[in-house]
Every structure is written in C-alpha cells, then in structure tokens.
Image (tube, rainbow, N blue to C red):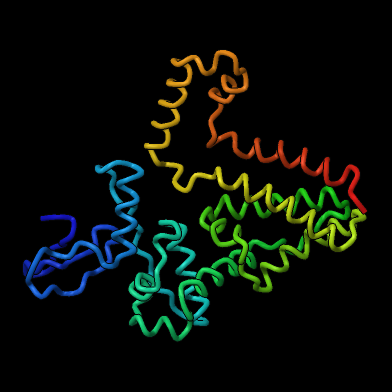
Length: 281
C-alpha cells in the first residue's frame, strides 16, 4: 500500500494527498492515480525534494480539531495560525482550511475573501495577542525600545512564518499591526525625534529585527541543516579558508540555534546606541 492510500473499513482504500494528507477526490479510474490534492502541494513537494534531496519526507501536519464556537472568521483565522505553526505558510491554503474546519470550500469564502485576506488576518491576530499586557512599558525611551524590539523578536521566534507577511513593501495595516508601529514611533518621539524622523528610526529598528529574524530556522529539528552546518565547517577548515579569518574560526565554534538570541541582543544594543546617542532632530 502506497502513502497515497489509506485502508478504511471493509477493505476500501481512501486516497490521501502524499504531501498534506488531505482527502483526494474520487478518481474516474483512468490514468495514473492522483497523488496531490492541489498544485500548491505538488509544488511544495518539488521544492522540498530539490532543497533536501529525493528521500526527504513531507512535514506532516498533525490533525487539528475543527474550531467551534465564537465568531466564524476568528475561528478560521486561528486555525490558519495553527496550520502555519505546524507546517509553515506553504501549508496554509483555503482548500486545506476548509477541510480542517469541516466546511465546504464556498463556506470559507463567506468569512475570508482570499488567501491574502487570511494571511493579513493571521498577522493581525498574532500582533493583537502579542501586544504588551497590562504591565506598563518602561518610561525610559531606551528601555521601552528594548522591550518593544524584544516583543517583536519573540513573535518571530514563536511564529517564523509571520516574517514573510510583515517584512514586505505592502504589509497589512490592521489596527493591531499599526499599534506596533505606534508604540515604537512614540518611544522615539519621547527620545526627542520629530515625527518624520521617528518613523525613519522605526524603520531602522524594525529592519534590524526582521533582518535577524531571517536567521530563525523554521524547523529546528531538521537533521539536514545540522548535517550542512557540520559539513560546511569541516570544508572551510580543510580548504584553509579559516586560517587567516579568526572571525570565521570563532563563528565555526558557535551554534546558530542556541546563540541566535545572544547575537540579536548584541546587535540591538549597538543599534540603539547609534539611534539614541545623537539622534538627528
């Protein structure tokens, strides 16, 4: 029995997508059996094989319970967040969302206009839940900016896929996302910046946070990355490329998984030193 089929009661074989495990439509019985539920799953499988080799298996998404109760749009967005956390943005489609929610495809469109609307709503939900709680922000501008930058960094740590939605030239502009910008701009204004310069300072700070977030690994348990890191370090040492580069030798002794937060804090301190030391007013 192949991965594309699952035995049901009475010996009946249920066709399943080999990439996302979604149920496949019943075949007419002619030609090769269908293996993927959509072109996006087929493309995702191709990219995975190209990047990780032909023997790499799909990243299975655990069965998620259909959301119940409350606002239907909120439930669908929450399910989209769970799908992205489990399999990345490639795992999020309106087709899969409908299947996991137990709805017909047209039922999803009653609450979500399209995939772009869904992704924007997912970012808005994360921004709203990741906002500072009842504890007030520090009054000192530098301490406040450190806290806000750390909050944004923590969001990308918990939801690495969020970076692809926010770090664009056309980011979503929901109330919670705009409130994230408001808080940083207000901190720079308190530090003495004029409004226009405060926004430019925000871009510099957010650009640093998002740039560092590119180093966050989507799948920390991926054995292929550890193999690449070890092989690359060995090759650089064998070819003598570390001989006159002390920084490269030191970098080879670090572990990106465990040292990334330290790298982030180091760069953040230097950036804030520059932005708050002698801001252009």
